[in-house]
Length: 463
Image 1 (spheres, rainbow, N blue to C red):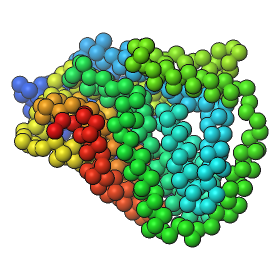
Image 2: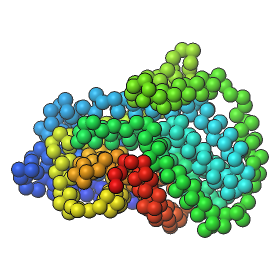
Image 3: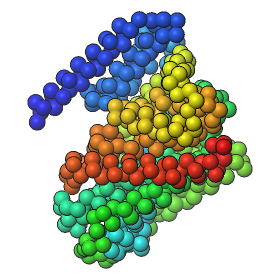
Image 4: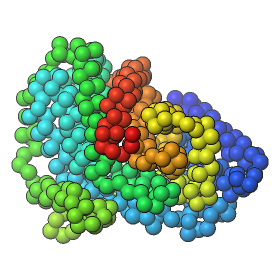
């Protein structure tokens, strides 16, 4: 096994190095400047290192802005601009808040309460599991996915399903509840990053926290209908859930009464939700709520989280977010974004809005095979926004389409959380690919039949 992994890393390094050399051999021109060439080489090199898992993600992420400066791509102030944006600090706060809510136990309490209330039969438990993901996704701003995947695995283990159709559907729905929910629920590390990129093209562009939930609300219907479709295909009404509702009631009782920390967490969540939902009234950016409220978890007298909630922050992910922000900022500064958009525009002139959105969905899905979702957010929003403006469109539908594409996967490596889900060993690679191809087909169909018409009805696409 170690020899195989070593060979994989060697191949990864060869691809990374050869790709970097090939880019540096491209002749420069008036539009493809030496700075753009160096930027492209450095950015793709870092993305490849992360994609092939060649070293800890924090190393290339920290070195990328340094490399931009050393290779004279941009001044040092531009290279380190991501760390001066509220987006970076908002995302850090969101990670801290999720860890604190998880540590105090309120997330697990909510999950068990919903399942014991709505579950009972096998099929009802599937829908309850999705409902858990939907609610926790809103509360934690999509920081709940590992909890949901672990919860799904725990249910399979407790029921003794092993590697079976019963486990297969529960794990699939657990993945949908943990990851597909990000199509609807606001995720700071996604939307805020993309908005930052689009503002480099359209400075007046903005998206509120509630906009994504409103405009992508049909995705909830898509997910529920897909779960229904799975229950029909697999005839899951015949599956038996040992223990049924009693198991979840017992697990909920074992949690005991709400602790003082959980009650304080509930109050903090209420304040956060009120702040976000009333932003149009008070005019104070919702970003500031993530930059301030999470740190109140550790104030004496509140103590929702402990030092553990801070120590568990994955610094590699945080710095990779900054690196992805930097890729977009630097690319726009150099004019690469406009260059890329222009090249694509040459081939899609005269295309209709609906065809444009489907083309963006298709291109994003292909990019997702190579890049991580974070890297996609760094590369695609600005050129897609530029193309939208050239077509006389609001850039928002393009951004929402990119969000759809981040969950259009059919191989586990495309999203780390799916890799963890697959790693539990309750589904084969064949089953994983089959189920996710089914999901892609279903969501693509409903994207055209429901989602795009809904955007027309909401007025963000003009007739």
